[in-house]
Image 1 (tube, rainbow, N blue to C red):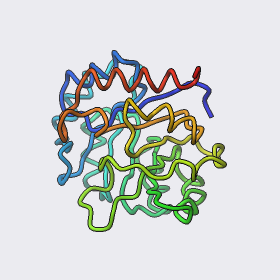
Image 2 (cartoon, rainbow, N blue to C red; image 1 turned 60 degrees about the vertical axis):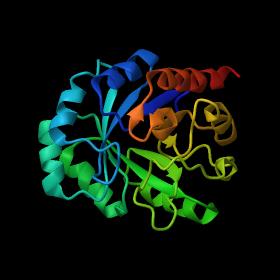
Image 3 (tube, rainbow, N blue to C red; image 1 turned 90 degrees about the vertical axis):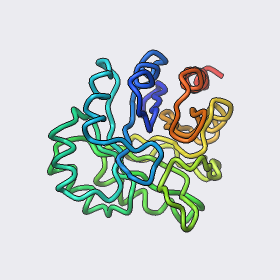
Length: 219
């Protein structure tokens, strides 16, 4: 587990917001490839956005149950640093994607109660990183980015999984420091929590979020 805070700003759609994430000191920027999401981008648009990312800002593609045909096109077109699997991908599928594309893979695991934590060990064996997110409510259109949090105390005694992990779900500039304190997270992911409207990032909220997350270590 790194001793430094790393922030991922997900769901970026505009060059200015990629630049805002970089200026704020984010470690990762995320592009969403899921048509139902207000943050969805095309492969062509993502390729252009990726060019806005300076060295040191890792480019992450969020996909949901994507098939090889889509991933072939995506990885051939967009210069990516990581694939984030945010659907119902099995551990076997995670391992297959990691092997086929030669990119680090982050697997999202939705959490609503303690029983959901059991899946984490299985994914730890095959993924490079884990994203611990709030499980979407039944019937939700989106697998993430719903602005929902889970009970962070569920992670209080689970700070040291075998893979690096990132906390997501309902995080905002106002609550990220407390979430990190309760969970021991050193990596955090935000999407809707730095938006002025669904899919519309706010550069000032991005800045405030990164500042709050990085300050949490010294609090």
